[in-house]
Length: 339
View 1 (cartoon, rainbow, N blue to C red):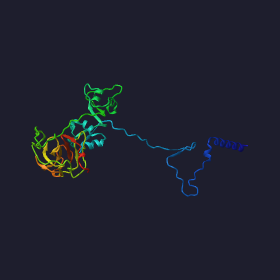
View 2: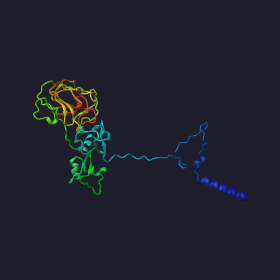
View 3: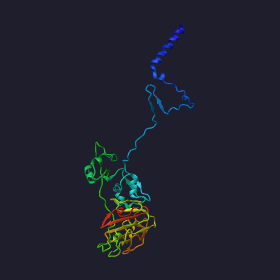
View 4: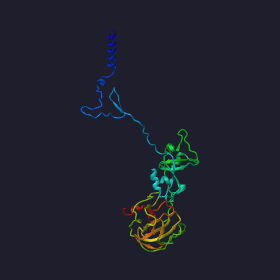
């Protein structure tokens, strides 16, 4: 009788197991470690869990991907040899104008004032970095810089409490999307005739005028043997292009004309040459290491007029090249031949 009770208990246990475990488990073959008809072991996918009730395989994620956040604070950057305003702006993903506006005390709106060792403020977004004044309001500051008041209030880097929105005088804030006019620092156009004003403040290279001589062809050649941009490009904040040249490299007259400036400039251009082409055009060549022409001299297209350098306000060898027409600046890329 005792063995019959034991047999009954075992049968009852088997019945309970059969009820609780799904049929799919009983029906599933047990992996033998080798495929049918083969000799290689079965390799199960790593880090995969088999759910016995629904047959769904799920992979384990062993790390969390944290999305990168945009910078919201102003940082500082120390200018190095070979830097340009446009290059620094490109490095940090902002416009050259934004970089100039944030550093008026250092650069005075002039990219050619850039020099190694200067410490620049680099805003996180495009716009105007502004020091709040007594009496300013969000509306008045936004109106001044042609921006949206809400952009100032909501910008995270300004750390403004939305429940008590106020900015103390002397506090710096970012005006996203803001803009302002530039104070242009340029050498005035010097005609080959009598200027009628004293140009002595430009430096000893200024010429008295009253010249006649060669007239331009109206076409232009490259003033440098290297046909590429190495620094600042043409734009609202830089009315020239910085072309590649090495110290002592040849600088050529882009077209025929008469020299109206030849020598040292006191406005940051270093050794400089300006040519009046007699047809409404003038060209300017700055940061030279040597000037090979003199006031009133006729020069001809492609003639050697000086040597490349890095004099004046310059962070590395390049040619600052300007083209003007009837007193206004034009983009040199519109008149230079394709590189």
